Image (cartoon, rainbow, N blue to C red; front, side, top):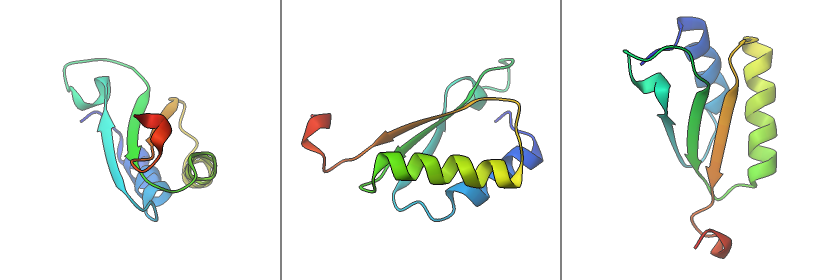
Length: 82
């Protein structure tokens, strides 16, 4: 996994209260890749807009990363995801 310790700390802080499952995916999980956004997949029944806003604000308050954090939030109980 290609994340710096300050990025890991910021993400742990930002994702601490997420109710659901959280996964890191994309190029950052491959140690042989270079660069790339930080891609996070979240399965949660919480409001995707509020969840995204809270995570991004908390992450910025802990560490201003130069890399983009892409959040993909899926609500398992939402019929629109079928």
